[in-house]
Image 1 (cartoon, rainbow, N blue to C red):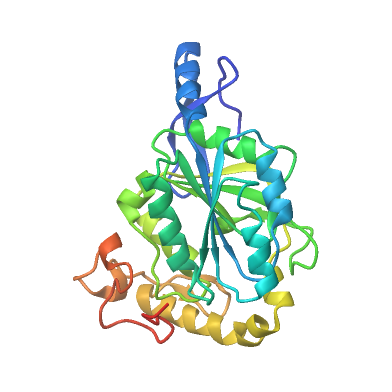
Image 2: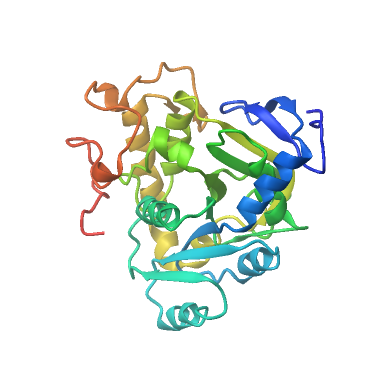
Length: 310
């Protein structure tokens, strides 16, 4: 992809390709526009929504805090280990953070939804969903935010990352999906919130991206390698999660297939099926999940893991 025209050190794309990770129709902003935009945004906070369980995210925290960008962390803790909880409490006063101790594996979708609504209610410029087992490299956090600021009507912004450590795809550079993603009010206005029937994890990200793509949400990907990701650290190192992971993935995959009629079991990728136009091919449901129905968006189609007590 050729680079955008630049004036005063920043570029503004007219329109980003929906779902294809490209930027099209690039044009330069005037210096006055750039300065005004930067003044407004420097006064705003970027929110990071982080779910923790048993892996301590020190590298992630350090890579963000050293960026110079004003941030606030919304940490939702799903684990029960007392020493970890005390360590989280120790972050108060050191970084700008709100801590939520759920003390159970309530599902990523629920905590992501809670993080998004609170972050934007408190006036965040952007809200990022980030995994605890990745970190930004070479000023990647600042680059990611500056890139997002150049996209008109941005909905979702992804980045590329290098898989490291004991990741099953270590050495590969891949798009990180919801492991590191900006979700804006534009996306929430069009798509709504995550489907909490995907629990405790897996396929909720694919579902959200599918709904966003169908609704022509502006989705872009920063093509530089901005993060390193030791993927599935908690799954690999926590015996409780490791024991259950196969059943969790199968249940959520089956729910995804039932909801959309698009998943290819044989190859683990989207196949040639004709997807349903509405969830479960039920005309009562649209592609948007409103906050008011987030806990049960599709009555009659719940799966067993959607425990209302979470």
